Structures are given as structure tokens and as C-alpha cells.
Image (tube, rainbow, N blue to C red; front, side):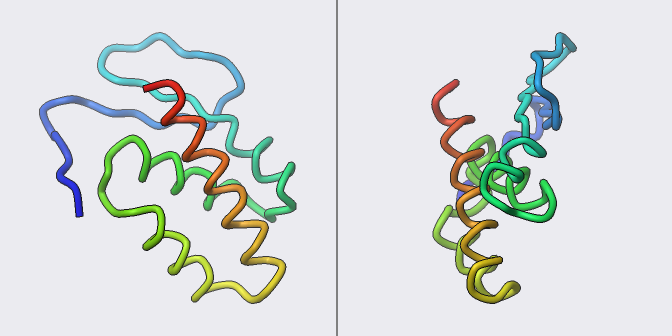
Length: 93
């Protein structure tokens, strides 16, 4: 498990445009990503973005938690949304 640098403010925003603010602001179009992957809400996408931004846990652990919580196709959509948001944040790093 990674460590989080609490001295560097981080704000994760569900938005389709960049936002200027003090500290580290990461925008992710989580609702749009969720819809693309047939996920019912942006929660899993936001968790994927958070994991990428902080390293607080591994993506594999997030995927396991999603699959533990949701059945079959619902889990697949949520994992896909989380992965897409995760990859989006990593691509910006």
C-alpha cells in the first residue's frame, strides 16, 4: 500500500473541464466515464481516479472490492469505469 502526502492538497473533481484552484486539482469526467461503461453511478470511476492519484491501494485491490460488492455485468461495468478513470489520471501525471 502506498503513502499519501498530506502536505500536498489534493482535490478530485467530477468535471468535464479543467478547474484552476490552489493545490493539486484533478478533474475526471467520472459521470461520462461511468455512462460509457454502463456503470450506474460515477463512484467507481472516482475511486479509480483516487487510486491513481494517491497510490493509497492497488488497482487490483480496488477491482477485487468492486467484484466483491457487485455481481457479473454490473461489476464488469464498474471495473471498466474505474480502470478508464485510473488510466486517465495516470496519463496526465
